[in-house]
Length: 199
Image 1 (cartoon, rainbow, N blue to C red):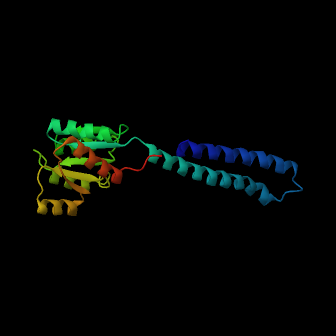
Image 2: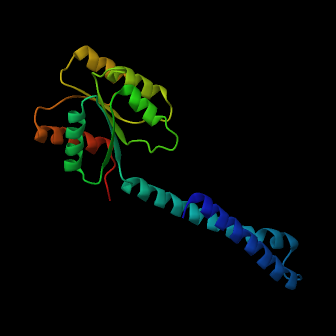
Image 3: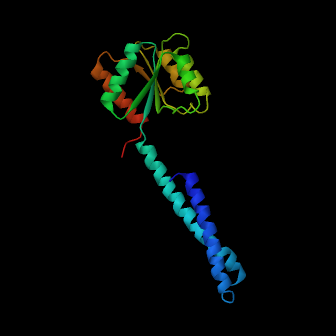
C-alpha cells in the first residue's frame, strides 16, 4: 500500500474509532471521565500510524532492492552502444538500457518530465556537440541528476583527463577493453558497486 493511501486509511480508522468509542463513552458516561472520552481513540491512531510507518519503510526498502535497474549509455558510436548493451545483458538480463547519441541528447533526455532516472550512466569521453567532460559537468550541476554514478570510458588513458574527471565527480574511468569477455568483466565489476544486491 502506498504512503498516501496508508495515510487516508489511518485517518479513516481514527475517525471511526473516535465516533465508536465516544458513542460507548456516552453510554458509560458515569464510568469514563471526559478527557478519556476525547483522547482514548487517538491512542489507536498512534498505534496504527507506528505500525503502518514501519510496514511502509519495509516495503519501500524491498522495492528499492528489487526494482529493475536502468542504465544510460551515452556514445556517438552505435556499434559501441550495442556492444555495451550486449555486455550488460550478459551480466544481468534483468537490467534495462537506454542510450543517447551524444552529451546534448543525453541532457535533453534526462531533463524530460516523468522520465525514470538511470541507476548509473556510462559516458563516452570523446563525442561531438557535448563531449564526455562537458556532459559530466552538466549532469553534476543538475540537482536531480548529481547523485547518479557516472562511469567515463575511452579508448585511451590520459592521466590529466582521468584526474580532472574524478575531481568533477566521475565514479570511474574505464579504458574500453579490446574483447567482449573483457567488456563483460569490466561492466560486471562496476555494476556490482553501483547496483544494490538483489534479494
